[in-house]
Image 1 (cartoon, rainbow, N blue to C red):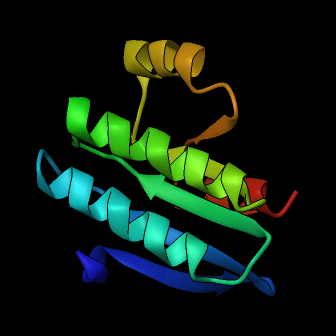
Image 2 (cartoon, rainbow, N blue to C red):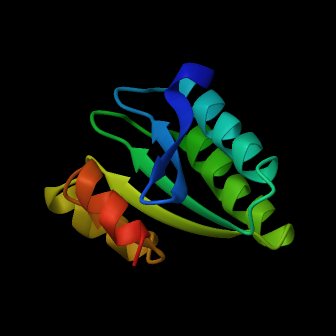
Image 3 (cartoon, rainbow, N blue to C red):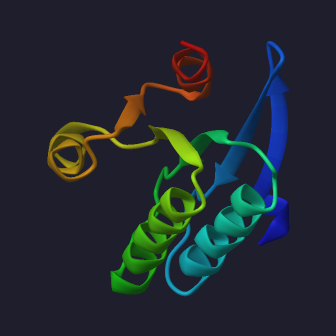
Length: 117
């Protein structure tokens, strides 16, 4: 899963790129857990992250892993600023009702720009 999780720098800001494209259980859960490890081991107090979830399907296990990631960050005093790419239409509307603290970006470039605001 490590090849799907990487750090990039955009205009001087480190961004955690999470390539979850096409993932299903249990690989989706493993990738989320790796993202959590990267965040908590980064030493940063604010994590700028892009999750590309194009053509992926979250199950109960990966949903719980995502919740754990957010909780672990809060407990460590780490702010998680998250942009999601690859969700549209009715799924985007439904997700926005659940995930109010995330930005639903049109593409990776849009996500990068929003994270720097």
